[in-house]
Every structure is written in structure tokens, then in C-alpha cells.
Image (cartoon, rainbow, N blue to C red; front, side, top):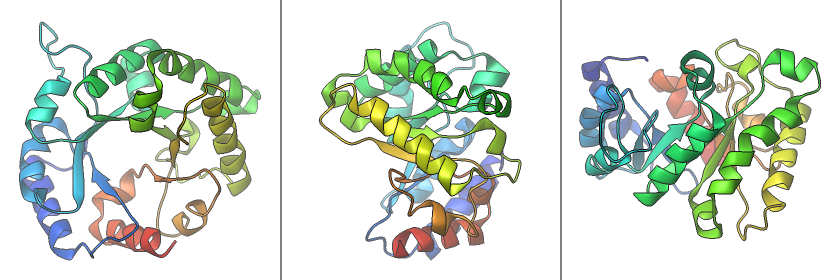
Length: 239
């Protein structure tokens, strides 16, 4: 919940003007809901893809404060983040409701970016794999082979979000390999795109993006600092 609509539009304008031509990198941005229309307008025709931070599972109805996938599509958006740890912990979203939201997005041909991850207490208790499996269970139930190709996963250890702590390269490699193995066990024809999220910045991203099974990053604080955002994009282009 950062940047007002006018600040978001200004940021998007500057990003469009300073963005280099991309050959290897996909750049996606997800501003607050009330900023989506302005940002989408500013970035229309650019290489930057605009999406939302959340979406509901219903096309319309008595769901005050929610936003439907159909409404997002009408704005020209292409994706939505789902199941972010803050949505799960602060607003009580379950893995089952995340799966419903995912199916609704896919029905509108929008890409779901599904977040999964464990708390520090769960990792300390050696429950990381159990937590990830439980979070992915409803997702796998809702996915067929075609839908699986359209879905992006984002591993975000809750203890590393906004704390300055970053999982070690070994922890990231092991966890992403576990997620990949779970995915492959479902018999999908495509390899999963798995992003890493958790205090990603220009100082650590160069190493993170080279780890096997890491397809990119879900960036938090660094994404609203234009200089850092452009540096992250440059690192991705060089990787």
C-alpha cells in the first residue's frame, strides 16, 4: 500500500521513459487498486505488464471492497498476485480461497501469480515442506495441464519479507527444487515459473537469479524506488 495514484502515475511515466529495450526480461508491476487505471494508461504500448495485487473469485456481486477479474481485464490488465503472505496473515485468506481466485483469473485468461511461503517459526520447526505442500494442494486440485502453463508461483519466506533478511542461496535452491518436484509430481507438461520474494534488492539479486529453478523475483520495497528498479532490470538482462 505505497504511492498515491498521482505518485504511481508519475512513477510509471518515468519507468516508461527510462526503461531499456528488453530482450530477456519480463517486467510486471502491480500498484494499488485505485492506481491501476492511471498506471495502465501510462504504460499502455510499453513493454511493462500491469496487474493487480489481488482479485476476487466472483464476476460480480455483493462483495464490498473486492475487485473482480472481469473488471481487471476491462482495464487491460494481464495478471494478479494472489495469496500474498500479508493477505493470508492479516486478512485471513486461506489456500482454498486462493485457489478459487486463481480459477476465476484463469477463466478470464489472466495470469495468477500465486504466493506461498513459511513463517520463521515453521522453518525453525522443520515444517517448510509441509507448509508448502498444504498451500499448493488446493492449487493443484484446481489446475489442469493447460491452466498450469499459465500459472506463476512465487516462493516468499514470510520471515524475509520487508525484514532485510534474505534466505541463503542454499535455502532458496533447496526450497525451489522441492516446489519443482511437487509440481512435476502432478504430471504437468510444463516446467513451473517460480519467483523468489523476500527483501530482494540490487545487492543480492544477481546471485539469486542464477540459482536453479529461480525464474525471477517478486520485488517489494525496491520496486517503488525507480533507480533500484531499473538496476534490478539491468541485472536480469545481464543474467
